[in-house]
Length: 291
Length: 339
Image (tube, rainbow over all chains, first blue to last red; front, side):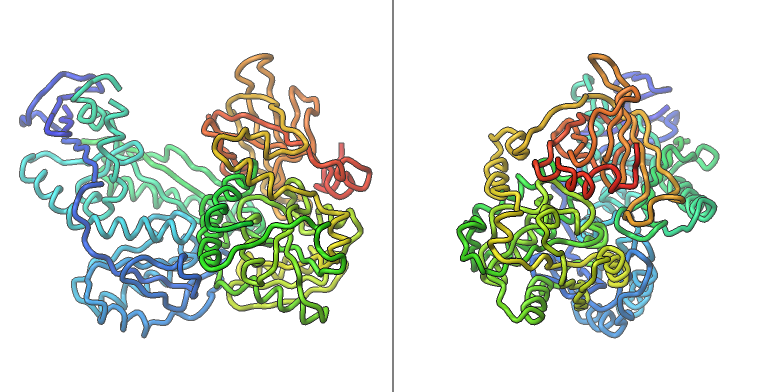
């Protein structure tokens, strides 16, 4: 039995069927919570962009810096990573909640990973969000998403703590699209649940004040991965896609899918125009079941 | 006059029928243009109203918009390409004109004109969008695309003089990361006046008003081919493709949802070049075929997914394209497809 929780209401759901308003009992296998995060307190974020100088309106938001480095979409390094600048900014900015966004990271994330090491060394205990984990191509969109994620971290942790204290069963949170993520995943990637309440209410269409709770209880653990791949020929592409599919399966398990239940539900691969042969955008989504 | 107040109209209008544009690259050009227009405005003039010997240059993004989203402009690309052509030709640039008016390509000439302190010509070299720099009405008017100045986002500057432009330019574009800005087709205002598709900037600014009908953005006609659901998207591995084109072939199959319930197949190279309804050709380049989502936004070939509901529309190309020379440059055979 699944307990759906939203807006102070909770409902019991068995095999997709609504049993009615309910409270927690030991018969509950999993608790699915729908929340919106648009009104929570945001933690200040320090943004490090790895790339090149740009016009003012295209620069990183808030407390931020641009340091040299990054890769092109063809995988070529644009410049060596300026590790000194990263360490200097990290130790002097006065914050411990960092976002790193490197040009080209959906293709090659090496510079983001290296920057994370620099930050961790300069600011012990720093919380670090890397933009490549959001996959999305488009440096500014990815950076904004990562900054929003980092800002939500503390509030998401408090919400997850309070749910863990209320419910002894595994707790899941509703995503903004469709699907659920585990409490642990929610703590790390709260931005994927930004509109979890609204979207669950849409899916629970006609159950009135219980709509969001019901919608959340109907969903399944879901995760997706977006990458830019380079492959010459069909067999190299198949190999690269196999890696993406492994990654999304691993990710959906960390999002709370029972390991044996995880499967790739969609894989979209498109060649990118005006780039050399064999550069593709791939987006994989995987789903699984709650316990 | 293009100002911070009127730019949104042009920006809206430029997206109504733009294929190949992404939200991200458009937003980059828009925010950048708003920056540049904060202390200047750009006069919009008819080519025929300029002194006949005014040197005009066409400005366009060259390469991949996805690459621009990752490697943002440094901000000085426009002025570098303008100065490079002036240096080569020993003459000041007196006006800027667009190569085409699709999304960011409508805004980059505005940015360039503002930075160079010159007017923008009301018109463009396409009346629609083609993938190659040389597929323009300027070429049909006998004007050479070169000398062409190309600036990459990392400070690179290349001046190209050749009669094999695409072959020479593509490796250059890739070597700077996949995109750059070009100033090309240096020409007199008189030559521009005789080859430009006139009045298209002003028209898009009117079409960009939310209350205006979409058809206003298509001066030579807009018609609906079908409404239906995408039932299949098939992408070739690209082997055996036409090497001169910057894309792999893709086929999209749309099942018409009412009327004759025809199966409409859209053959694409970057953009849709041919539409077949139950096997019979119903639309073909140089006319432009594009898919619109329910909210009116353009669905690009590389974003099309099975299950999506789309309206397939045909934008009639300007008369210059419906000539023997126009079809040779922008028709099916130019895309490597022979019927």
